[in-house]
View 1 (cartoon, rainbow, N blue to C red):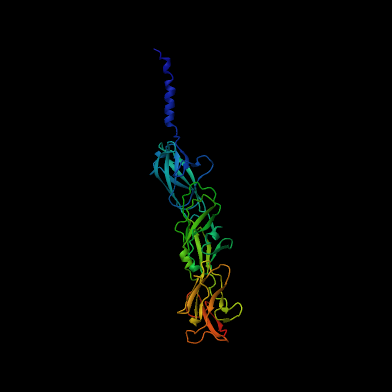
View 2: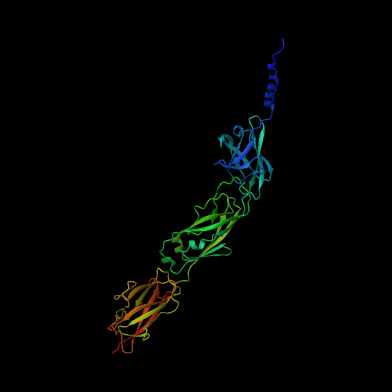
Length: 413
């Protein structure tokens, strides 16, 4: 009996099924993403290798058909393509993401101090025994060059005047006269150093890191430098100023700051100097005179003692203390609260204010009667009196912060 005609196509169908079982598996690596998103940073067949930055614990996700089913213990391996250096790789975890595609989370350890790029290949063992290859270029950290950012001169305006010198490799801060008495608040307390990277080309996977800073003076700290991922040619390192400490300096400060990349051989230096003002003192001896009669002053008239400072005081003022040897023969020449005078001791003070001048007048009113020594304060020919002046508190009557002046008090009858 002849076979029914409808049964004849069964043989070709079985042959196709057997051929499918015996054909090589088509599972393979398709693309790579960072660990936190589905953006493709490298795609197989795009004509370039996956590029990652050198260093330990560099992670990325490899997506592809059945990649999540590859054996992480015995089927996954790394091979050397070019360049020396010990490189290890491992599959940390597997799963599906980004539309249900399988992935393997891969972690690579390579020498962070690489001087030049090296190449490796990762091989994933597929479920049916074939391997899928991912070519990888491990990029060396670029050389860096550090300079002071252009806003450094405005940042330190509340503590001094800043100048960028030597092609911005040096920052010099000049403290003003009387800086140690400055009580102004500084709302901007951060210096910024600019880190320029040498050309480094494309890097697909680049974990963030922080630059290390050494050689810092006591008034500067870099506890929280801004992290970077080499996503741009330049990065910024923030350095916080301790305003109280910089105002407490008693000697000039000169520091060399070394900024180091994650690769310890990639370093660059900048200089920071803090210059103290000239020691505040008197530029010349004081002179006490009446505007009309000179250094012989009539009883009850004013005598102005002219003081010339070495440098202008801050707007907050410079304290001047003084002593009149014949305390009963002199009184304060003004009722301003800026000036004090104790008739019982002959000691007083005045605060000189001004940011552009160094010449000041301290007024006194002279008297007749008897001095504290029991002698007349005045005579028809004039009795000489002496005033002593200090920059700051009264101390030893020596040095540039001390001066004296004499004048004569004349009785008209």
